[in-house]
Length: 323
Image 1: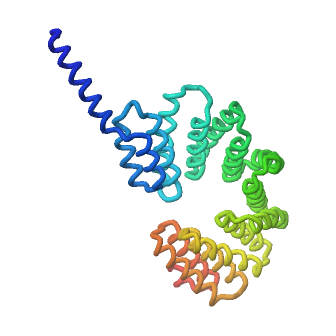
Image 2: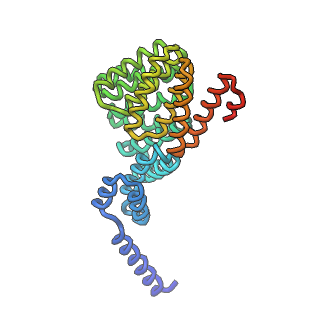
Image 3: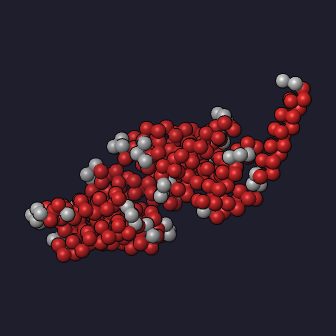
């Protein structure tokens, strides 16, 4: 290649780089996009940042928050963005432990755990725990340990979950992590319910309930009521179960969580049926189906029809059980 062609090529490259630099959002633009908490705005900002190699840390941050804003509604997308954020941060920081790297490992582990990809979820959460220990942020260690314990419960690894939760019951109190302290009791209650120790589960869940009555954490309060409802159901204390499911529904309605409202109409309907209140059972199960239809949840709709089918099956109305 001639010297002239090399010079022209270099000039074109420099011109393009300067052009792209000029098109890149500055820190203020990125912060404004994050402040909107609007997924489309953040996706547009990410598109701009993808062409800005000098702003990879900002791109990783936007990906990180896209994961946070999407995991409750679009889990696969949340996992994708969390993976991309972690990939960039590993390139930027290598094996050097720091807070943002720990956050990326933690979030990806949490999302994978929700998606039932437990092996990878446990791996990433363990990495987050190691990082937080190395940089000495105990409050983040406990949060990641808690998420790890939840996966162990989901996988039926109860001894491992029990060990972590017993440690957290002390550690969170020492660190004055009031919300996490109460959540530990919920998970202990959930684990005990899985193991069939319903009376003890109620005891742990009542501890959580009292704490959530003291502090305003509506989502956690609702989850506590659901778990209490299930434990009372298995103890055949149907009136107590009904009260807890009703309260959970009211909270989830206030929060606008359509799936959870539908799910707990199913729980409530089944409890009415066990309590021999068949008219209310049928009406409530129908309400669960309507709610699932309104929030376009195929999973909840299938569950609703399953519960209606079971309702008719137990009434020995076999033709209607094909509902």
